[in-house]
Image 1 (cartoon, rainbow, N blue to C red):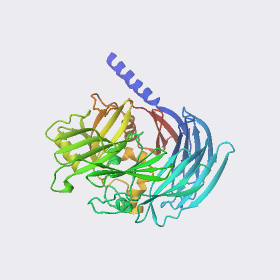
Image 2 (image 1 turned 180 degrees about the vertical axis):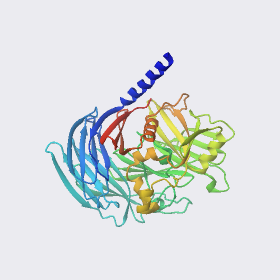
Image 3 (image 1 turned 60 degrees about the horizontal axis):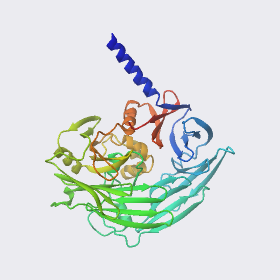
Image 4 (image 1 turned 30 degrees about the vertical axis):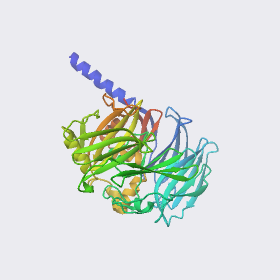
Length: 478
């Protein structure tokens, strides 16, 4: 009897503890074509949620406790013309929200003035005939669209300021070294045009936000970009032997090139090798593998090795802090030896990611297959394979990360390092990322999910289709 009572108390305690993660539930009746977008103001510790359906968009201002401070509603822009919310900028406590057409040539902005209670709109037509849009970035008072000019070495930035003014800036990468995957000389456009289907489409440039934990699916992209408001850092790993780093200065609108070599592995065929990198804390983390070994190195941007490690199929991996975990079709298992891991690492799409855990850095190294038949069928049917992959890459990258292992095979290990790049012992804590993934796996009758971070807390918002409420939950790393 006592054992049953204790068990009941533990279950009740668990339920109550989990329910405390709900920080707000907002009654809002949404029709079809739901979407959500958020702006986090780290200075005021306020968040503005934009929740839309086919008829209206509601701007909800939340204070630091995620309680409603104010709200305004406005008609949704033409649903046939403007398909998605893509960015923002701030003007004091007011927000300007940007929508776009599928091809980004038509932009629509809504300025929400919470003081006057007025919504001001503006439309832009961008001359993108000779450009390919690559990515979008928002930070405080500026919104950017990054594109590449056809058959050139030139990036173009479409810049929208806090007053809604649009201007263009070109950055020519003169004398940069551009080669395709087979060492054939090309230009910037040619490097971005390369196909790595079915995993990576031409002109895909995966946006990485290192403050959030990056999935191996995202880390496995060969072309990635990072943004901090002052510069855009682009890493290109389409060539097996080096990482090309391009740094775009957003003040002077100039470009800098860095070439960082990868370790030499003797092989009869280049296709027998695999490599990738991740940019984090002004350093480059690189991996390179063959069927029986892999190298992991940490470098500064001048190609100086700060720390390096080698793992062999015949020996335990000394710098890992976790078991070798594999996921496939919803099932999970632990691989027994290094040879299994290295073989799978090399045969699939390899990648890595970095994440700050207090004074430690968590490094995840692994590999992932392309998506199975279950992924992105609706978008695929509308835009085709290349269009679907590019459309997804430019829409909701943060939330896509939590669905990125569905219909894929994933194998990975975790490792912990200190600030001096030394491997340290210890268990990897339970991460907010893992808790959020578990929550989504168990709660399928929800939609319009979004994720944002403030201070050390993660907040997940979602529309509960049963209760007709928009709910916000808080998750933290253990």
